[in-house]
Length: 427
Image 1 (cartoon, rainbow, N blue to C red):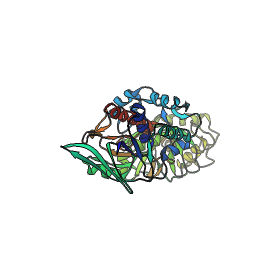
Image 2 (image 1 turned 90 degrees about the vertical axis):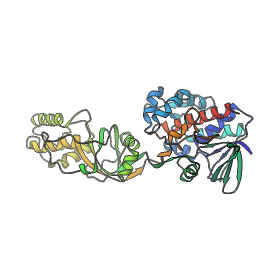
Image 3 (image 1 turned 180 degrees about the vertical axis):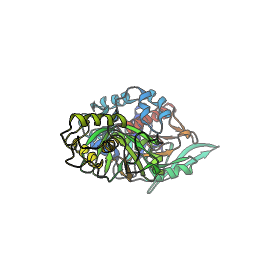
Image 4 (image 1 turned 60 degrees about the vertical axis):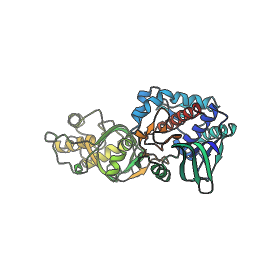
């Protein structure tokens, strides 16, 4: 018989266990992990460096990085935020550093540093870690209408405890068990992913990064041909929009701007079966008309030079060459000879180029999902179930997810700490 069983040997599970034990050393705590190894997501996160959290100090700004959970996490982040996370690790001999983009990593640049810290703490505090124990059933045992304890069944054993913390991340089998307990599960869909695109305009530009504005359009709005004149062009519906750094890859497009769209549009893009048109403005500070005016001026100034070799705007040269070719301008065509229609085509390619997304790819090794336990069924002062007494949740098992940058881990740390507070205060 345990006092507390935590199902899930990941970041939120370990953090919860450690904080409970720190607050009440008399409690008998166990972590059940389905696999041979624990903390596997920690190991691969941040390219093996572990993006522990983000340095954004204001909870009101911090929550803006959560497409699902923004409103619910405001209170929890005032209770326990990224500064508390930094203090937790640094007080245990793990110095952290903040990079220019706000991401926080261990100074060692190794996720193993974070793993070792969590493992050492569980060992020091006497927390039992039971591996290769996938949970097959979770059952509340009641007496006189109230849960007196919980029965946890694994593939090889059965355990009893007074309180259960579920911290299994995106685990379909556990979600199914939770649904059988009466909780509503929001169907999971991928959240952080890159766009697959095959198009000559970005071909040969792998590794090129530039700032851009990207709009997701309705399916019927895709036409690779440039047929609309500037004056006749009507405003069109935009489903999603984001601006930021865009990375061209071997398979299509990635970078912060694409990851932001994939996170906020997780459900929408899943409904579109990851086949949809986008428009790209490679010069987000300008619109099509102003770019055309600029090109017309350059036509007069650089009349004797070829368009292909005269990069008229601040975009990577290889990309400029491809967009010039896509506009119907010949390799040796000079500015003096290029027609206004062709320059209009080029202005369109620079500010409103259409590309068709055909599928997605996982962003590096980091797999994040939108979906999980309905947030309406969770008390965010304790991260406890509103349906069952002595049942708590932490991490991605709930319908909370974030963009890349350490935000998903901060949800795990915050949830784990608040669960620990709620449990330790009542024991």
